[in-house]
Length: 425
Image: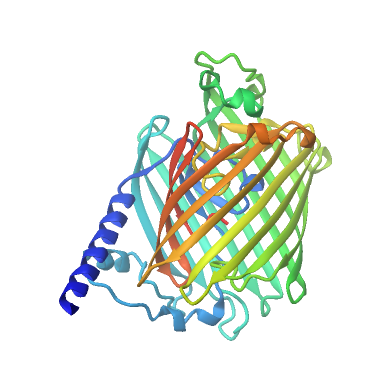
C-alpha cells in the first residue's frame, strides 16, 4: 500500500511538472497593452492573451516562516530555482528577483519572447508591520517589430501607514478595434487592425485613515497613437483612430480593506471607489470622468487551504471619452476568455466567482465562472446582452504568496490563454 501511494505521488508530481513545462512553452497573445491602467485595475500584460498581474503585495508576517516549502526534485525545480523562483524570500538582498522568460506566437505579433521579472523588497528592515514591497518589470519583443515594457511598483512605508504605487507602460504593438457596444463588438467582420503606440504613467499615494481603510490621491497620464490602420472589410466607424489620444487626470480613491493579505487573500473583503477627472486644464485633449466601483470577498474553506472568491466590478464614464479610455471587457482580469481589445463601450459591469483549490507542495488549481455587459448608458445594461466566461487554471508558488498563473478561459465565441503573476482579483 505504501509503495502504491509513493508511485501515485510521483506520478502526480510528474504530471504537474509536465503541465508547467508545456504551459511555459505555449504562451500566446493577440495585441500588446490593449487596455490602459485605469481600466485594468492593476493588471499589466504583454498582450491580450499573455498577462502579468501587478497586484503583488505581500504579508510581511509570513516572509520567513512560509518560505520553508517542501522541496521537490526534478530539473524543472532546478531551473526555476536558478531563475529565482525558489518559493523563498531572501531578505539579505536589496531586491529579491525571480525572472520568468518564455516564447509566444499570435497572428498579429508573429513569434516573440516575453520576460517577466518579479522583485520583492523591504524598505525598512526593522518594519515588522508593512507588507513586502514589489517591483514587476514585464517586457516583450516579436519578429514583426512589436516592442513593449511595463513597470508596476508598490512600496509600503512607515509601518504600512503609507503606500506609494507607480505604474508605467511604453509599447508599440498591434491592436484591434470592433467599434462600440455589444452589437458591433459581436460582429467578426467589424475587425479593424492597427499598430498602437502607447505611453502611460500613473503614480498614487495612499494614506491609512483607520485600521482597515485608506484614502489616496494620484495622477493618470495616457497617450495612444494608432498607425497603419487597416479596416479590412469592416464597416464600423474607425475615424476616431486617425487622431492621437492624450488623457491627463487627477484621481481620488477610498476603500475598506479587511483582507488578511492583499497579495493572496484567504478571507476578508475589499470595497473600493476610485474616481478620476480628466481635464484640458491638466493637459488632456478632452474633458471626461471615470468612476470605478469594486466589491471583492474571500472565504476560507475549512482547514484545506481552499478559497472561494467572488467579485463585482463596474467602470462608468461620462463626458467626451476617447477611444483608448472606453470601458473594456476581456483580458487577464476582466472576463478571461475574451480578447481585451474587442469589447468596448462607455459603461461596464461584471461579476465573477472563483474556487481556488490548494494542492500539496507549491501547486494549486482554480475554476471560475462569470459574466459581464457593456452599454453606452448605465440604464441600458441588460441581461439579454451578457458575455459569459468560464475556465480553469494552474498555480505554482514562485515566491511566498507570489503565484505563477496559467489560465485557459472560454467565452462566447472566443477563448484565451493567460500567463500571469498572482490572481485575477
